[in-house]
Length: 355
Ligand SMILES: Nc1ncnc2c1ncn2[C@@H]1O[C@H](COP(=O)(O)OP(=O)(O)OP(=O)(O)O)[C@@H](O)[C@H]1O
Ligand SMILES: [Mg+2]
Image (cartoon, rainbow, N blue to C red; front, side, top):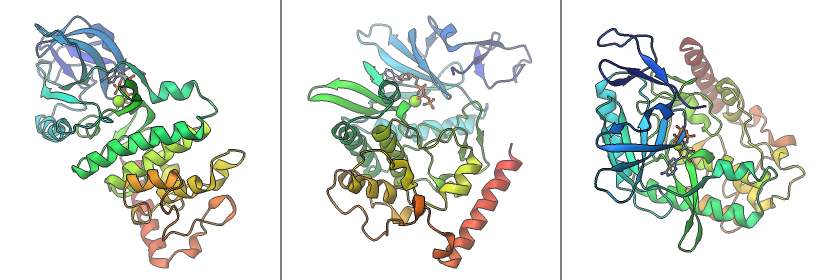
């Protein structure tokens, strides 16, 4: 659903959704992102729209005198706070330093004269993994799953080694292009999500955690905003299941459902019933979705290798042998149970308070 853009015609600023401009008090114009085609952002002319997500819109854009167009993502602001925009730009600088065949190249991150941050990146020709999945409702053959996961893991591992976490890995943020050696996965929106931008229909808690349609979010991200390479590993495992089976693991679960269920147990084994997902891959997926980050693989590379049947999928973690993979709560140590119960209560309380 493309975000609507709220624009003050007097101040010529894009503003957070509200009826009136916070500066001049005038009424705001509201329009689809397409309405910006033909306008200029910091010297880039927006030539056509490539798509829009919850956080903004992506355009094909060109700077005067440049032969090659770029992709420009114009972020829709969550609030007018200049400090948070500054923080976003500082964090975004990190993503500019990531140069890897499986990560989209970001050229420039800046605040535009429209009062919103934007960034430019290489213009990719191809389509997203989400679009590809739509055409494969029963999933992909094993070798294609491994190719996608292997490439995404390579890009993630590189970023993790450079101190950058994606934070919003999902099939919409993986783009498929024809590379010099065949099909190539490119990760988009690296570390750029969530700093200042609040997707529509979602909420941000005071600790900065995003609450919305969290289909790929790791449970610790919900409970205590614990972000790290382990959260990207969790998201990649959910994507891998979708690639194998064609089905989303979470069918638009609410945050409360995630909190109640996924902090207690990894993927349910019945997800694999009637599928031909190999046993070592199932064990790897269960380990990568353990509620405790320390029980997952040490890094996404180890996860990708275990998925292929290389490495040790179960390692120190016993794969749950219970019906439907549900780990009985009583088998966990009592203090772990207490901590989790407190975490759940806290997250649910925060969620209810901030609705
Ligand atoms: N560098 C790029 N080159 C070509 N197309 C791109 C590029 N970056 C993004 N797109 C396309 O633009 C569209 C919108 O991307 P955008 O990131 O705004 O949406 P999203 O990923 O669905 O949601 P979110 O805002 O949560 O990231 C996507 O369909 C994507 O395929
Ligand atoms: Mg995106």
